[in-house]
Structure formats: structure tokens, C-alpha cells
Image 1 (cartoon, rainbow, N blue to C red):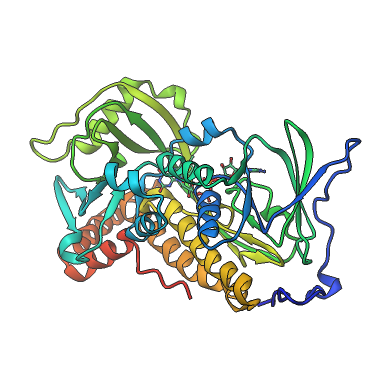
Image 2 (cartoon, rainbow, N blue to C red):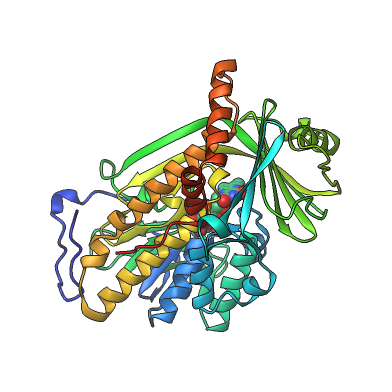
Length: 427
Ligand SMILES: Cc1cc2nc3c(=O)[nH]c(=O)nc-3n(C[C@H](O)[C@H](O)[C@H](O)COP(=O)(O)OP(=O)(O)OC[C@H]3O[C@@H](n4cnc5c(N)ncnc54)[C@H](O)[C@@H]3O)c2cc1C
């Protein structure tokens, strides 16, 4: 692993041969306004905002650059299941007051297959640990409010973000916003700009290794203005495909259907969605699905992706910029929160003592958890979805494994401890 230059070392520790041209800051006729911060953060999703908030608590200043508007990021509906560790981080950081008030704490989930429901009881299998259902957009709202209340600097609606000097001690980020072009010089850059962001591509070719897997299906996700039909999440495996009954609040339900990865949402009028949800979920005698108006619907492809390492020079990648998982394990947001917790510790140590040990170990510390979560998300996905190439034998094997997971304490404890989130060892 490459060693970072120490805070007190004026020369770049990287051999010159590793310096390559990056997307350069583009010269403009107008002189850019240059300012300085300690950590420049690209992306105001959960990773970027939580990092900025945690750094502030450690006395480290940052600027967050976001391509979208504040309204857009505060309304963007995505994940909604928080692991115990994510909840603990938000609460201990002071950003969890509304989460504690409004979040729905769940002590179990149901696996539904073969005409019966099977509860995975967290209170028995992983005592003291649970999940909290609280929408990602609510986490984003809370973190933006916390940053702005503390005088934090979030620049929304920036464009043409470019990175420069990431292999040296004075990395910089250039961008445009409504006031014109600007450059922010920093000690470090955090690439929290999601899977389609620009930071990962700023790393010279040949440095990173990518691991990925595409799944032969996607998820049609809908938000419905209807009281959830179940108190806990239901993961349903049926011959027609997978369905998930989730929720966002006592008045709003969230549903997913396994569909083709390139499914045309126009082919799914509301009636068809409700009929298909009923066909996959109403498989237990007496259980009825409540229906109501659909507020939002969309299709998301399912993919697994990992970048190794998650760092180059003074650029650190975190969250979806470095890795994505299929949402079956409900892990994307939680993994993003873990990465930035590790990064905060590492940066705090560097600013306090100049010691680079934790920064040098950032990738290793994150990737250990990333790969555990990759496996769990892949495992949940293959356990519950139907695959086109499956024949009757494969399906029986899947049902047998589901039966084992639900009837063996050892197997269901393994599911439960991964689902609520393994203990967070960040060193
Ligand atoms: C469509 C979708 C649906 C999902 N649904 C679920 C789900 O149901 N359950 C689940 O567990 N997980 C889900 N996930 C995963 C989860 O939402 C992500 O893992 C989580 O958002 C990761 O947070 P992040 O901050 O790393 O990235 P993001 O939330 O993607 O945030 C990145 C931010 O960077 C900004 N950005 C991008 N490029 C630039 C740029 N060039 N300059 C400045 N800013 C930039 C983006 O606008 C965005 O605000 C979903 C993800 C997607 C994409």
C-alpha cells in the first residue's frame, strides 16, 4: 500500500513515474475564485454529508460540492433500512433526533416462500440489535440541516467538477456555479459522488482494479400512499419472481418487484403493479395486501461493483463512488456511512499528529467490510430471486436452502447478524 506524505513533509512521496495527466482544470476567460479548505468533498449524498458533519465534530473544516439542487437531493427516494451501527453513528453525532422520533425500529423480517411466512427474529438471534426504517432522503435532510446550522459550506448546483494534483500535497477541485468558475484547494479530496461521479475517473489508468457483476434482472420500485400491510419487511420468493414489501412510515409503503433489467416502466400501469404484488405476496392464507395511490415508480438495474484500492494519493473514495451492491441486503447507504466513519478517524489522526497509519490503512479497513457486504448482498439476491436458467431442480434447491435458513438457528443467526450489520471494527 502506498504511503501518504506526512503532514509535515513538504515533498510528494509518490515517484514521478506515477504522475499521469488527469482531467485538468480547464482555463476559462474569467479568473476563477480560489479558496481553501481542509477537505473538499464531492457529492452531497449520505456519504459526503455525513463525512462533512463528522469532520466538523472533530474540528476539521470541509466544503461539499453537489451537482444537484438542495430540493432534489432532499426528495430523492432510495434506501430506507438503517443498520444498528448507522443509527448509532447518526445519534451519537447529534443528527439523529428526528430519526429516533420518527424511525420505525424493527426486530425482525419475514421470509415468505412455499405458502408460509418465516420470521427471522433479531431479538432472539442478535439480542440488542435491530434495524430502523427511515428514508434515505430524511437522513439527507437531517444532515443538511445539521451542517447548515453549524455554518457548514455546501455548494449546490455546481457543474464541470474537475480534480487536480491528487498525487501531491495541494490537491484542488475546480467547478462552475451560478457565480462563475471557482477552485478550492484542500489537503484532501473525498470522492463521495456516487457510482456515476467524476472522482473515480480522476485516478490514473492502471491504478485501480474493478470487480463487478450484473444480474439478469432489475427491481421495479414503487412508493405508495397506503398503510403498510405488515409491521415488518417481507422478502417473498415465488415462481413468479421476487417481491419485497417494505415501508417508509406508518402511512407510506415501499414495494419492489423483480423484473427484467431493461423493463419499460410504461408497461406497468398501477393496476398491473398491484396485481403482480398481490400474486407474489398474497401466498399465505388470510394475508391481504392493502392498496392505494402510487406516488412514485421506477426501475433500477441490479449490480455489484467494487473498486480496489479506494484511495490514490490525496483522493479518497467513499460510498457508491467505490462500490455498489444489489439492494436486496439493504446495505448501500450503510456501507457509505461506514466508509466515512473510517475516513473521519483517519483524517482526525492525521490532523492531530501527522500520523499517516490510518490513512494508509483506509482502503484495507473499508474493503474488508465491503467484501463481507458484497457477499451478503449477492447471497440474499441469489437466495430469493428466480433466474431464467433455473429448472425445477434448481428451484427445489433454492427452497431447500430457504427452509434451512429459517429452521436452523445457526443459519438464521448468520442472516440476522449480517442484516442488522456486523459490529464495526474500523481499525
Ligand atoms: C436508483 C437507486 C435506488 C436505490 N435504492 C436503494 C434501496 O432501495 N435500498 C438500498 O439499500 N439502497 C438503495 N440504493 C443504494 C443507496 O441509495 C446508495 O448506496 C447510497 O445513496 C450511497 O450514498 P452515496 O452518498 O455514496 O452516493 P449517492 O447517494 O449517489 O450520492 C452521490 C452524490 O454525488 C452527486 N454527484 C454525482 N456526480 C457529481 C459531480 N460530478 N459533481 C458534484 N456532485 C456529484 C450526486 O448528485 C449525489 O447527490 C439505491 C441507489 C440508487 C442509485
